Length: 162
Image (cartoon, rainbow, N blue to C red; front, side, top):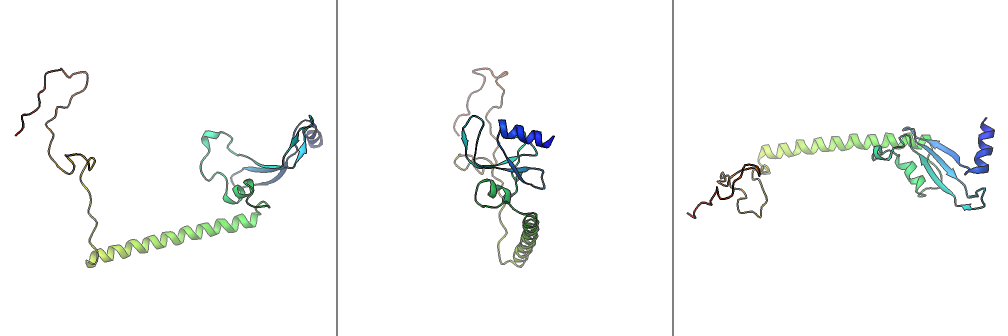
C-alpha cells in the first residue's frame, strides 16, 4: 500500500521526504526541487506539518528553536535528537541559574534596605494621569455621577468659585 501511495504522490503531487519529528509531535519535511506532472518546476523547500493544525491555537514555542532555524534555512542540516536533548538541558540549567541569581539579588536588596544603605522604594498611591489637575489629590469630587438614563438637563449647576 505504501508503494502505491508513493507512486500516486510522485505522479500527481510533490515528493516530500520526512526529515524528523520533534517532542511536540510536529513533523518536518524536505521537498527537493522537482517538476510536477504538469511540468511546472517547484523549488526546494522545507516545511512543517504541525501537530496542532488549527492556526488560532498556535502558541509561541510550538516549534523548537533548532527546528525553526532549519525551516528558515539558517542551518543546513536538521537537528539531531542528541543536540535537542543537550540544548533542552542547557536551557533548564540557565533557568535554574537565573532563578538563583534573582533570589540572591532580592536577598541582597532586603539586606541593604534593612541596614539603611538604600532607601526603600516609595509606593505610589496617586491615581489618574500626571497631567490632570487632580493628580495626587485625595479630594472627593463634587461632580455629579449619573448614568445617561437618569440625568436630567438643567438639574445640576457647577459650584460657584470659592
